[in-house]
Length: 282
Image (tube, rainbow, N blue to C red; front, top):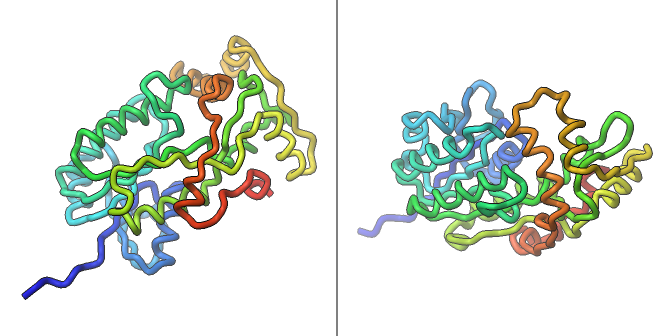
């Protein structure tokens, strides 16, 4: 007697954060049951059909236990730490051991081993490890988050950084979440695919400042720095060297043209246009 097909099972990481939380809420709104892997289940969002379980990326046994029997997993990249790639590799290895059917990984635009933006290299190494694991995958390579651009503005209304007149196709987190949900719920159609997720236009920081000015009613400007000025102005934060390198190279990557390029992937995956920065910050 033939067995009836069963609904796919889902797991989401990062549900206590901005991106994973958005996807978890979208799945719940569709009536999809899901497992939420979190460091502390007490902090997980309370959503209908969602079960929160321990599953820190580096905790092999917890992850294997949490992902046993799971078909589709959203793997949101871990917080920026010096050992982030090691955490990612450990999670991928545990997912493969658990028999996961499909990994959807939130990567970064232009992932490459020699990317100017230092943290983007982490994403390339993670992608390579996922490819080698044998688990079917989809990579969502997000551009800079449009939602984070107001946080680049200093108290004096100035964005400072060595971005020159380079452009970034900043993308809304809601657009990424809609795209990720679309991929998860139709995963076999996207096996092996890599999607560049961008906003509808690539903007200079001068143009970003103008959009933020219009949205907030305050005067916001962009002041280009040299690389030396960028390091000097951030030295007082007391951050470790790798973090300073990451902050500065966010801008130098833009200057190098590595975040310039508009994709239609958001539209193709969601069926609607990508959201302009003005609508994100309005």
